[in-house]
Length: 102
Image (cartoon, rainbow, N blue to C red; front, top):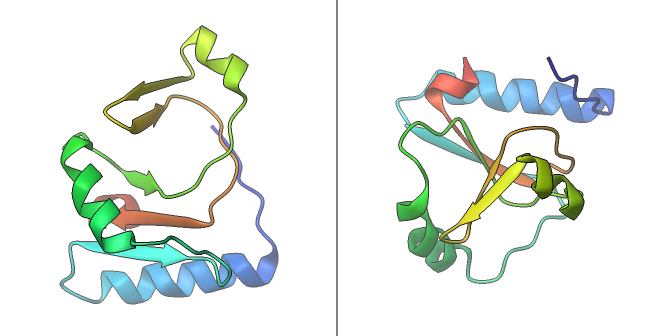
């Protein structure tokens, strides 16, 4: 089990966003921190989303990992998609589906 520590206000806002998302019929929710910037987001998302496995839980739009952890299978890079099999830090932006929101 991994414990992710948030600032209380940030955690509260994420919980409100997830709760609001679950009251909709939308399949996905995109959540950004207030200072997140991605140039040409829609085109980049459309280009890379086809490489995401069908059974995804969360798509991180930013991450920070120790490059040496790849040597022990903690992450794999394929088709510009990084599969993380362990810890990560940074949640500046991510996409969740209904299953992961529950």
